Amino acid sequence: MLPLPQLLAELVRRPSVNPMGRSDLPSEILYESHVTAFLEEQLRELGCEVTRQEVMPGRDNLVATYTPPTPAPFSVLFEAHQDTVPVDAMTVEPFGAKIEGGRMYGRGSCDVKAGGACMLTAFARLVKEKPPGSAAVTLAFTVDEEHTFLGVQDLMRSGVRADCAIVAEPTLLNIVNAHKGVVRWVLETSGRACHSSRPDQGVNAIYRMAWLLNGLEEYAIQLQNFAPDPVLGPRTLSVGRITGGVSPNTVPDFCRIDIDRRLVPGEHPQDALRNLEGYLKGYPGIDFVFALGQTHAACPPLNPAHSGQLVARLGAVIDSVVGKHTVHSVPFGTDASTVANAGVPAVVFGPGDIAQAHTKDEWIDLEQLEPAAEILFRFACGK
Ligand SMILES: [Zn+2]
Image (cartoon, rainbow, N blue to C red; front, side, top):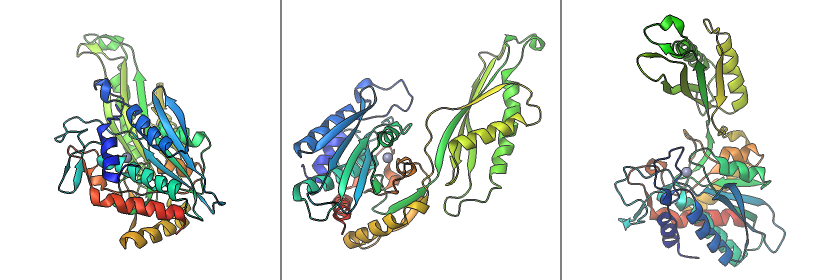
């Protein structure tokens, strides 16, 4: 296995941009396949069993397993995503992996190729050293975390399980045990188009949407009345985009809005959708048909109630390597909640600072790499 900075550089140099629904990006930088091929090669060189799971054409999860020679006292899943966000307006070479002042620059250097490289390094060390009493380890590199979380959903649907899981994201070597969930909905109204000089002959879909928007604003205020989650705060709803109509001189027959709903532990995306639909159907003035639906798979909330033991064990290992750690929540979604929802207690841990993720000069502090790999290795050793 390559030394950590070189391994990370190899990953950064291979673009794995998630287009996130856009169609204006150059195809040669899109999707995870180059990273997948490189990781597969590294894992095969270790001599371990590797399988690909096709999530979408040309986009595969990679799953490797380490089974220790003696019966494993426990099992752990290490999970990292392969994709990155796009590279528009970056002020550093996105795939250059340039090192300067103890930092490596490039898209994915922080989120989350560094975390993935540390997991691979710890895994390779286990395979080589076979320390007695170590865990059985599944190492999974998933696709599509930055957009619709499809990779981790397929991973868990495929039956991958463990006693606990560590999901890589930049946490500055601290533990993240809670975050809100997010679900996105689209709400559409239809009407009847006609010339704007005779609006009485048409039905205006934008006016209809206005009634719904009033209802949504009131609903969002009502959500604040629920007791907030003690750690994560209130459940929220926000309307983020509106489209509709074709020209000023046409009564619009179509309007659409996009809604973002943040869920707290205990809430379920489907229930939240049904609840809103019922509310809007009963809202004054809404005597017309509308369509409300989910645009893509939800990221559930990460509930800290199920990971207490894991947090204690990982925390002790972090302390043994770097002397201190914090346990906290974050405002963004991760793959950990989908893993946890499948019954595997999961936390988020990794090198680097989320403040540098997705930025125009994304970088990682290289000093975080070795401790991160050491922590993951020791955790798997049961130390
Ligand atoms: Zn990430």
